[in-house]
Length: 142
Image 1 (cartoon, rainbow, N blue to C red):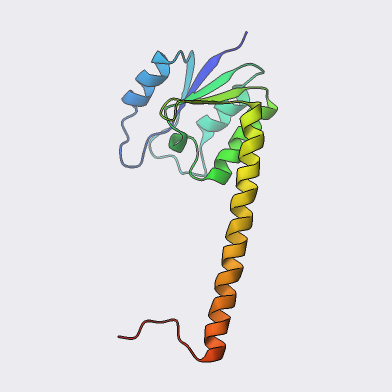
Image 2: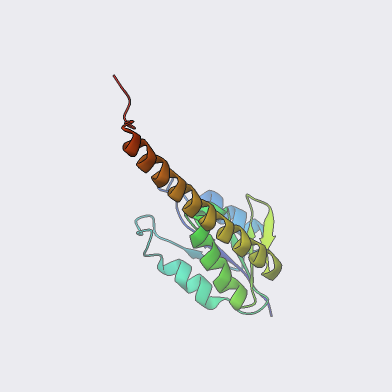
């Protein structure tokens, strides 16, 4: 039977997780995985446990997307893992439920973000080279 599971990660600014806990309970989380306040960003064992526990039809609930991931790319990889398990993600702050269909669209957005960043980087490098060849300096005159 599908389960609703919650994930809590304390904010570095506000280590108190009571608000997140109450919101997840109110949203129907039957089991809540809670990171310790001093966990390193890269070392999130409770997130790993939460993801490993997901089965088809389950929903992982978070208070907000920023408690789950730090970047869009990191979010994409987490969502992809949730999708592969046949589960969903629900974010209470953003009022969204993310399922298989949304993941496809998110992948397109991430590809767009990457290609835009690469294009911007190339243009910036070319503009800098052009200014250097013309003898124009990029530093401000004081």
